[in-house]
Image (cartoon, rainbow, N blue to C red; front, side):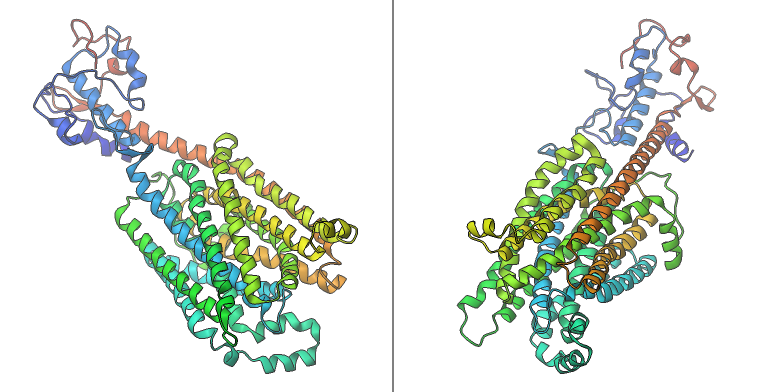
Length: 620
């Protein structure tokens, strides 16, 4: 009804209308009321307006008067404007490579933001593993305890704080409030915390407790021993959860439509995975600085300073791009019929999210991915430390790993758009769990049957340990490339049809809590297996069985979410069609009495007579 009332003024006619036509060089209002007549040439209706009524025009009792001509032109202009199509006589918006310039103003900065964010994330992800795995008195066994007892509580705390801030701060203020502490911490770590680590780490206390409690507490005590490295580890993990998932994707969902998302979200990853390639080379370059330094110089400290300087610079670039888009790019209009959700407290938000089947399925996808990748990753990193015990060697290998991941993901990104267009959201969402299952089976099989395969591996010039490192690396490369190119775009597309309140609080709960919860769930499973069977190697068959069950649950949630997502998309399209119809239908004509009334039946009924028409029908 609101749309009807809003369009009445545009579609109403003056008491004595004159013949008027549109002028292509003027705006809509000037063209509608221009008094300079021009001879129209090749006039036709657009595909979205009154084209469906073309049959009426050709009939003898169709629109015959000048007043009716003007009346239809105005209705067509309003309908075209409502549909987002060029109005009658209006020149088409400029395009570049088939893409409207206004769309490029959104897509290019978003792509650059994603490039910078993932460039930083690659450096941080590689560095955090080197710090906690190769530190004195630590090993890969620290990771399950770190993810469970440090990373998860901090992620939950952030989610609670973020939910609270989202109710009191604007979107812009919230973005900067979250981003700037990350930039400050990583800069401070490279230039302050790490150089002072020998003074601020309680190594003597940790040694004393280890002698008292025994070697089985090596993992928990390592968290105390290298607490600043663990803090870096947690902040790097939060960068992936918060900046990538909540801030960037939340902002992208805010300024793009579903149609734009289907077309461009997979392409965002192209630039992002070019970032993986370059950041991998950057990590390798700084990791190899040790070769050119003299004895007694801490090469790893210099490497950290260089990499953290780049992280800070990229962080400020992200903030600038966010500012530019907010100031120079118009936001898309959403459906007016979306219900406004009241602001809710933390507990109310959690209850609201838990009660939603849609959000629960999304959470299942995220948790299942976290558990699945963690079941394989920790075992692989333990093999990696055994092969590369030095921090610089470990970091150099991780640089090569990141570059290979970027190349594989870039290739998958090129294929992903074809997958989305040809097979749809549902098939794309099921590819990642399938890839992870197949590659995980290959990795666990090599560990289980490494002994019988040892002669064949030796003939290839590798040791069984090095073969396990390479196969585990391939498993991670294929899994992460499928995640970046298909899983992440699918997950983010699923948020777009939701209302703003569900979108903001749902992303905070899922991306910040469920992602660490998945990794912590995998860590808890590993801790239980270690305590029960003595080592991860002994529990490999059971981990493979758990991986199978989790992937099956993942596939079931993807199937359920596909059905709901399709229904929401149809509902949104129906609402948009109803809003367009509300603009097109209420055409009001001014009769001689001056009373506004709906057009006569002859307008909508071609069989009705038209007393005001004489002579042949006029083409519009």
